[in-house]
Image (cartoon, rainbow, N blue to C red; front, side, top):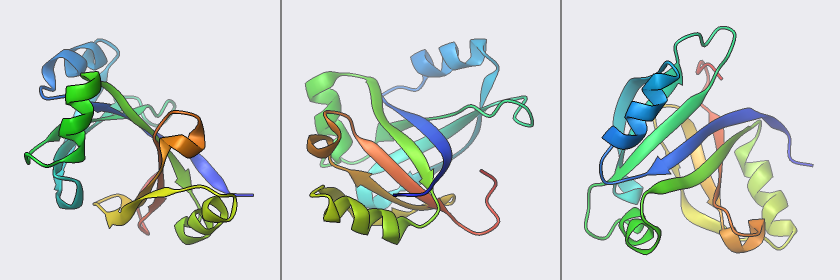
Length: 142
């Protein structure tokens, strides 16, 4: 069994952050920081609930920055909306091996950002949704 440590975030794909960011703001979910994720040709902004000691709610809004970004194709086909759901796992390598052992496919490459190492599980294996997995870097708060 894959050991999960918790729910990490919901990712929203969009060309423009304003519509989603405005709604998140109504719930006290504010932007924390942003970064470029070069392997996927996107830039991301993380949002978190202000009262994150008692209630941690994290979203990210991702936007394509290159013409060949897979997210651009996603947006052309589906429009803006939920892109993926991400779970925090204890051991990413073990999780990947278990998924492959169960006949699942991963959307590679594995990549790093400021929070941790990530990989996606292909929607054909999950029943239609893109599942992200992250193993946090040491010292990162969940």
